[in-house]
Image (cartoon, rainbow, N blue to C red; front, side, top):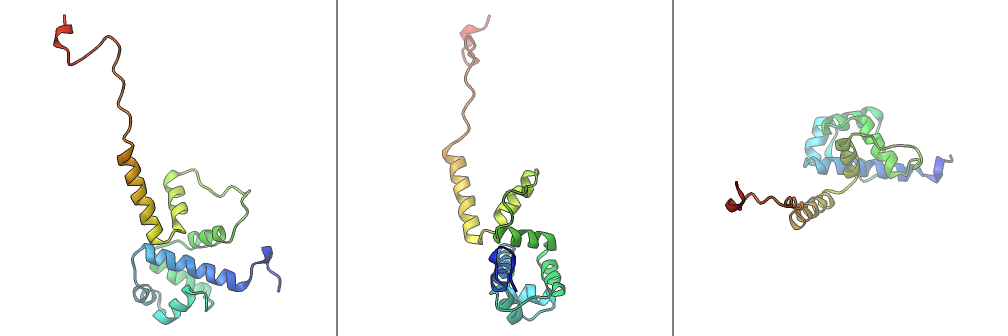
Length: 145
């Protein structure tokens, strides 16, 4: 069977597994915790995350619920990682949603690096101080009438 954009079932399966693993790691949950809450064995969830086993829609919904994620968000991550149509507007207008989408596919360590670098930039480049007005110096008591 031929797939759109030459994607194989194995590529889609492994990409979906990567999305699930990234979301699980980002929420700092163990394989055992998520699998138990989703009604799966840790071994099965591990195989799904590594792209070795298919996951049914019912089980995918259970894993999404266990992760506190909407299934649509998981599918959106999958589409983005598989290179969904770049010409189609896919970024929402809401900045917090944009940030969540942009960071959703990052591994936890990469996300920490971005946060650390952002904090460094904020400290290294403080906002400029307002320039004093010409002819007015609030610290000069001699200038008061």
